Length: 79
Image (cartoon, rainbow, N blue to C red; front, side, top):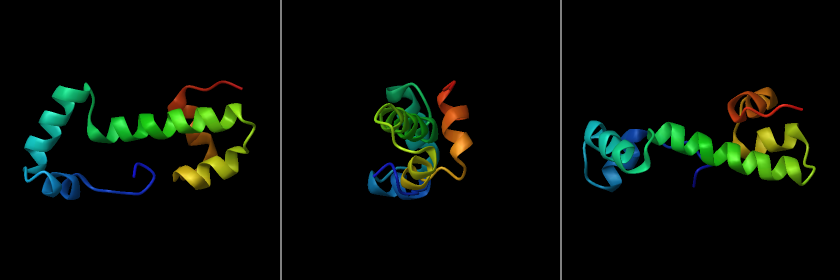
């Protein structure tokens, strides 16, 4: 679940790899780090919710952004 906080250590244990090896393989396959990938998923979801007219405060809370401005900054969204 990309909306909950999960560490690289937890992810690497699931696939029985060291955190370093997991991160390296993930980046090789996805083209970005696990953190960047999850952030991109969250930003994409935020953009969908913005287009639906949801409030930035509600979106920030739902997706785990500490501040509603982070949605705009990380997503490169201009209002």
